[in-house]
Length: 560
Image (tube, rainbow, N blue to C red; front, side):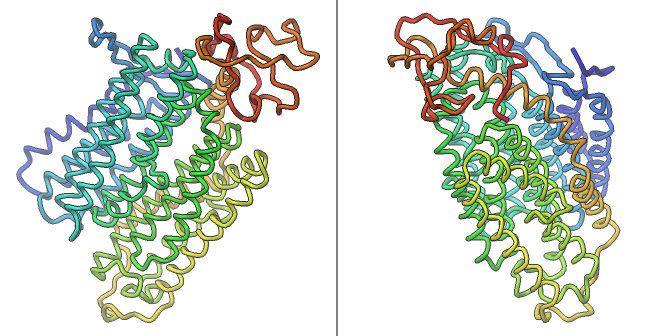
């Protein structure tokens, strides 16, 4: 096992916030609650120090495994690879930011609010570290309750509507996810995620499991047209709730596509790829157009998230190295940038008591430092060169043009719309004539706000100018997963009723690479590395061809 720790670091990181929540629950004063939660969040970050020993190699590291319920086939298993470790770091550093941006924003039920923050951190870290489907699902579901309470109790005027809508949408997705998990257990004989990632299932089975995954993860992302819960939740949630939603919760959907859909249902993933690409482009264009028409700053950022996450799902379902690199890079970027923007919206709301653009004009005169950070994060949001947003978007666009020129061209208006709505709100807030309150009532950033804005700002610049280190972390996992995907996407069980196409001319079984002698060669004229007609060529009934596992294709080339 590569990547070791003197203690079970993933278990500690997952359940330390839960333990801290019990401790905070017994503190009598609000000031003590705030300080204790902040200290607990900093301890959580310090406890993650062993993760710095993560090696840039494929496979899971820091593995932890213990018998949970052997009679039911349940094993407590945790581990991280180059994809999940970034999401864990993002979750860890989001907690202290949420505590600081809520320091004066939350004035009622302070203890309960901070307990919800800590419980959400436990669920977020656990979801990205879990390697058992049941453990993953328990933590996935556990996140709903504190997030629902955060919107319903500390939200705005329409908090009841927003919280119920959030809960019903996400619960509906979770229900079909549970069905898929049960089906995988019956068909695959295990709840182990690493083992299921290597399994070869019949295409018909993959077809329905992929649809279940799609509904669960598309709601969480959210993809068009399952996005309608997001603007309401963002607008009504307190600042910390919006930060967690943007920085962490939305990433669970795209993480699910990477961790479950592609490796467990490769043939179905390629079958549905044209649909996924189309929906992703719709999300990019729709989110940008609707954001352009918003007058509420928070709602504008919420709709921009729909567009930005569309780039992520697009990169994933292009099935190329650049596309998936850009998708994961954009997942991290979106968490940093949009989380910081929601912090700034909360800061300006504390001053003007309004989120309307026309009630927050002329801030450049009275809040120059505030506008500096707003401009930095805003420019990063639409991918200005030199910021982290540029790197992720460039990788996805490069992959899109390589895949098909038309796909790349359709994404260009989305990038232009992002610049349009960011410039629209930034120009008004910076140079408009103040109308909400008199000038002397404005005050610039305080020390607390400086603390939680400097870190994200530094990451925006560093990752924009020096992205190689991050790419080195994620690339081995991407290459390993794509190698497995490319070798298995056209292989289906022999029970699927379809005719087998004839081998390509001039290709004999002896000429195929070792381990692929039972696979079908591509049809004549098909692009290298892809099945004919971008669909799934199925084996003939009763052919009994052996199926491939990850170990059989390790090191195989992939289309990237």
